[in-house]
Length: 591
Image (cartoon, rainbow, N blue to C red; front, top):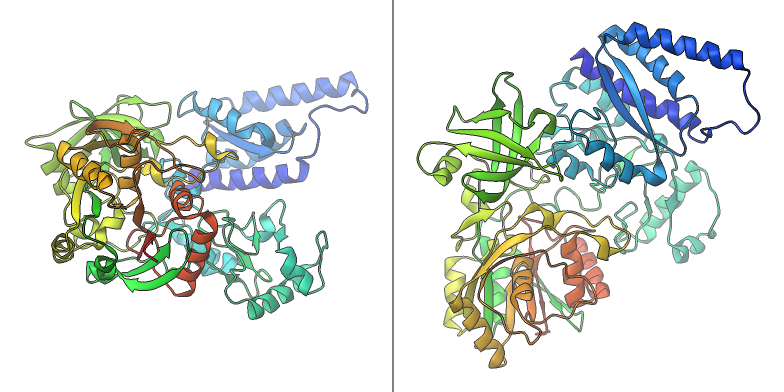
């Protein structure tokens, strides 16, 4: 345990030391040093290397403006401290401009290349899901009270994902380039213009005035185009949290969506969730409940539903030989009982390692580590795999749902059949058998298609050019019956109404340029964003989506960016619930 604490301290020290010398160039243009000085430095380095050669080495990647000339002396100073705990530190400085490329090259060398590194371009949540973060819950228990006092309880608790702690939020004064941005039209009302510099006290007073005059504008929020006041360095955890005010005195943690906005549990009755109806072209809004959806459907319409069933794909394994705990998330069935999985911590799941699950209900052997860090795992078991998985697997609930789901079926649609999804097609969670029967009685056709949802769909877009964002492939299947229902509706002038973005992406992948949907099975990585011309889908029922996600871009492509921003602002004001167990919206030309 001391070693792990020391490793964490070493990483913090590295960041602090490099922050002070990041602008120091790698070479000295002011003249060469005396040869004797270089010789003495080399002798000292050789002695230090000899002294520590028998100790384990912790390799730490550090991102800086330019590689400091003091790298070796910083490394030696840190190692002097860590020797007490039985290891030394090796620093690998990386210039910020090249950070993502160099880090990928280092990591491609295998799990042992780096022990501590910064995940450039990877969010906190993704790092945890990819097994790149060490769970710290037990490790930090003894220090919890002091850390909550120093950081405030809200900032400390923001590091929890699914009830486990993987990281601790940093305070604003630790950011290297703190800078707030305020909408010019608002700032000018209070006598400030672009480029003005003000101290923290004035800024706090200004924020208080803006909050009073503009209660609907989030003071700190995601940079998703909605009017906001923000600081790019506040969002260190990628969960829209930030610190505002004087540190240690009156910190105010502001969530873009409050915890209440992110529904932790499903609505008591599926179809009693709320429904925000959005005019696809008009931008008009109506507040309804989901059971009112039948009022907006017409005889001759075709409602498309994704009947994929969610696998209880989260498994907790014990490594044979060491007893180490590793979490696996099953992604794709590669055949012959081999699954592509995310494993975390990944370093414990190398090629050739074996894990047992649920008192040997399942046994998994890691066959290969893929280039993307995922693992190919071959499972052995008695009986039927899906039955064994149902015995011991847990639902792969999103990270923001921290409550334990008592009834696994509430994360399934009432019409779910073929198993294969790593996440629920959540727009369909609102239907009940009774509501579906009312829809049929109205003369609406219902077509069932299958797309097995992967986690790649929900990963945020970080590429500067959205065309550079790589979508993950997902398998889909459309029966002859479903294709005929959809094509007949289209030919008769009826509307094709998709329930969920999964149905939309399936139909748009399977349709030709004339909008004709072809039956069959395939894999799609279609990425729909503003400018896309829809070939088949007319209207969409969907939940509210994460900022910066591919899904928010899809609905913006259908409805228009300004209409979506306006609708989401209204949903926040009216306290709609967001994400998987949240409320729904219907993008339609009916209003």
